[in-house]
Image 1: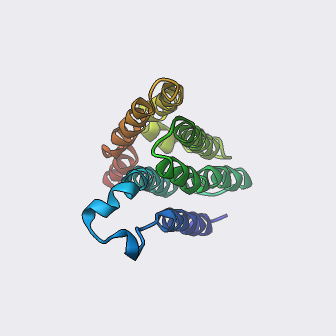
Image 2 (image 1 turned 135 degrees about the vertical axis):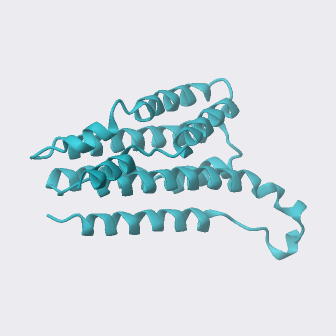
Image 3 (image 1 turned 45 degrees about the vertical axis):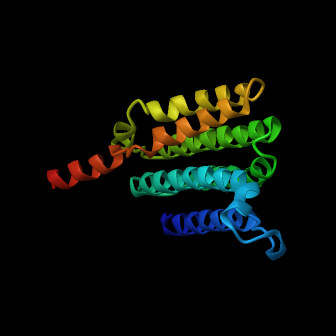
Length: 199
């Protein structure tokens, strides 16, 4: 099976996730004022939206690179991809809950649980692609030790546990994961560059 439909479907779902997140944000009503100071009550929602937007962007970027290096799609890959999209689709709900409750401990912990499960789902997708019939030795070599993929779940677990002490410490862990992934990961791009130079 070709991968075009899977990529188009995934791109559409991710675009909808971002749209739903921004629609969840409430602006002050006209009678509540129209100055920058009147935005103060929605600052937590804006911050949680910005963080979630970065995470969704990271997943979209990595998903794109992963499927650039995937030769064919099996039924297992389709289900693993849907599994990832399921957890990503919960991010708007947890983002809104966390933002509207000013990063209260329980919503902040639940947000972390969803991020953790999305990270594990991405790992399952990678594993399913690598174990598909015929394998993908070039992708496996490009991924290497995948230290980012291994440390992220650990940081999410620490963040969830930190909610018992301070939800701000938990948020610092979430921001740290985002920063780790914002540093460009050129492994798959290098793989394609090496392949082109060999041709």
